[in-house]
Length: 330
Image (cartoon, rainbow, N blue to C red; front, side, top):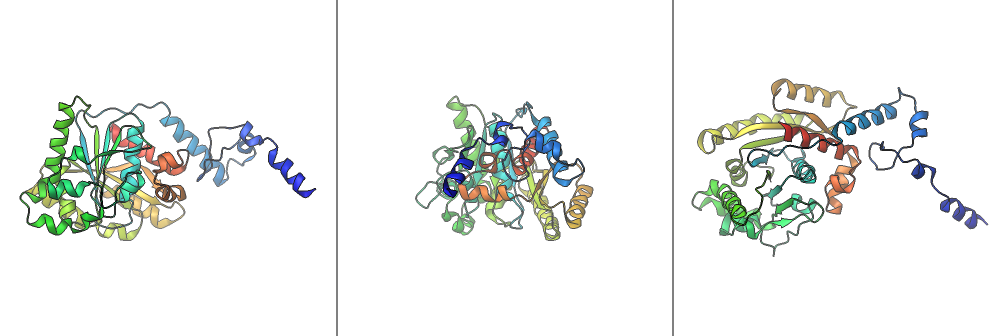
């Protein structure tokens, strides 16, 4: 009898599903009904969160992102690990590609996390960006399409990159090899009648070695993700000094165009203070969008996805959509 009762309850229509609204809970894609919203106290934290997210979604609804006048190449760099470089790279790239723009991600981190998140094979037998940098293989022979997102291609990284820092030392024009490969690839696309790329994102390792120097020399912009914690600020001055050296000696066109605050925890005074300090020192570079700490963002790579495809209705996906839109309209 108990089994029959349980079965009948499970088979009953779900009233929540029958009254689906666009509002969603903070970290899931569970729809919130009108009755639930009506029952919530407008002053409660959950209600304020839902109302805020709905307004943010409405601002993004139907917005068309402009194509840049030329290919924008952005190096995503920060020598401190764990600040969200790879997560920022793949999710902003996915958001822009989903809007119909042509995007490429170049993974030059030996860990290959960007390749994993975008669902591209990057085992030792795969031709990768290592072969481009060291063996002069054409970038066109390396790139692979992201299986989940149209208009997004990836130059994967393999474990061979771990030794590339040493191998690059003895090569001619060692700092310019990625830049030249990108130039040749752009000409190849034009020759084949393909549309030019709108964005190239280069995901760097958490260091300031020759791989990162190659990324700086290939790019015209730097995107710096900054975790909203004290330690993340300590290394920023050293990073900026290295960028100044690149500007002076190797790439005078390089600019720090964008800073994105990541892993923001609104419950702590420290996060608010770090965010305020960064905005004070870099008022023109810091995006208005802030990426919160998010379970969904952390879970997505384990399914070889970005949060944009893993849970597009989550707060994390919404934040990266806002960041991508703001970046595109700058």
